Image 1 (tube, one colour):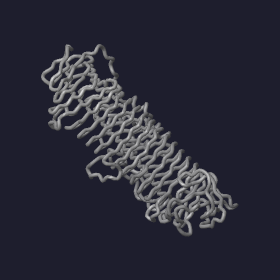
Image 2 (cartoon, one colour):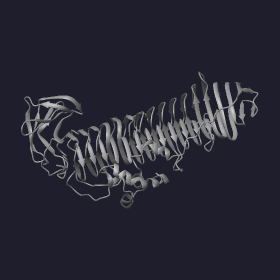
Image 3 (cartoon, one colour):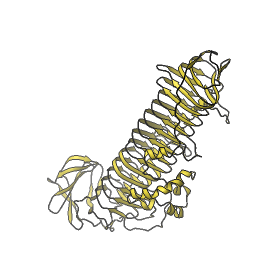
Image 4 (cartoon, helix red, strand yellow):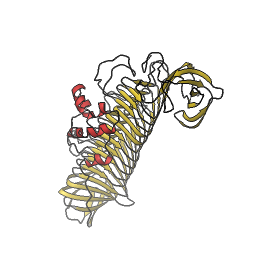
Length: 594
């Protein structure tokens, strides 16, 4: 990763980020500390990205999207197999090659069986109205704007248009896509366009690429849709099938460029490489984006391959709309930060469901990780609001990064082991984890101040429902973590809210109703297990430190359920399987692994 100007500028926002990321200031906002201790450029860069940025703020910091100039009178160009005809000035025809040298609007109809349209109009805006046009080239691009300020492709109402290029390009070819523009490129109109990139990419702009509308179908040997400075989708129905990356903005030199934004429309991408790849930012504020990358989460990926769903170099902001991702690699990945702030997101991954090198902040919407190795991973994970459900074969949430910045502290409060500048913070919302590795895992600190957290943890004794290497405090909300008894971790005794940790006499099977009752027999929690369970950690405002509680197996659970934690329950004929004192951990010490 490059240390880019945008990252450096983001340092000034670290103070704001620290205020919002409650409990995360030690990891998310201290770029100076990271620079002193991390030893890696990537860690320094990621720590400077403000993970609370809104879509509007991110887009405002980027280069402005070009506007479409209004068209004047229309000149007609008729294609006829191996030739073409026109009466327009500024157009020359040489066999099956049509060259446009003047600004203006041109209606293209008919077909070229082996030809090309070239736009060579420096500093001009040229609009091509494709009206049932079909262009195939065996030698180069079907349409190539080699010199133009802006090329506008307008799809005529009710029209069906096709573009297809050569099967190969020279390695150093500048024109290397079926639809190519050296300047800004806009696609608009209500017609249909099918673009086949046989030799390389399907649609490419060397500046910005704007899609306003149309039904666009793309198939490419390499990248499907590529804009150097940006790709912006404001509407249309877009289907991409690409051997390389699906949609890509690859300007990695200018800090305000290299971004991809979706505000409306329907986008479906199937890619051999990354689904959506932005050198800087990905922003979703509306519409639907569906991505399958690398064959999906069950596919095996070569060691040197990248098949991420949505990949950004700086930040991914999902603020509206719907995103569905099935990727062989990380489903959502950012070298900087990820901010979920209102979108509906569902992902399946062959690696991490959502991965951020820096901060991962959830401020609303919904996130469903249906399959992953590790569900959510970030140096600083924060849930402020929203509904999150994670299914993982390893850790559910992992507050971690590439480097630990403090020495191995051994066993102590939390999970012990090597502690770094990492954190998991829950301030609100609903979080349900179904994990076969550690459920909620932080290689640094963990803090719960609100919300509801239910961890259906591992059945094997080598992992725990909770695993926190540093301090672990709870001051509000509800926590229920159930799992094996081999690696038990509980909150620290300095927690402001009461908690209990109960290791049952023996493991209970999936489907067992677990009741937690106070000394007067009042049920304070009712939970139905989804796996074999032998340890329960529970905290809520109803738990008082120092008081005794009994844990029962049996009885009846009733009301709405969040991950198995129900609204109410009754003991009935339930039997006592453990008696505990709130604030005291099982054998092994407070908050320590056994």
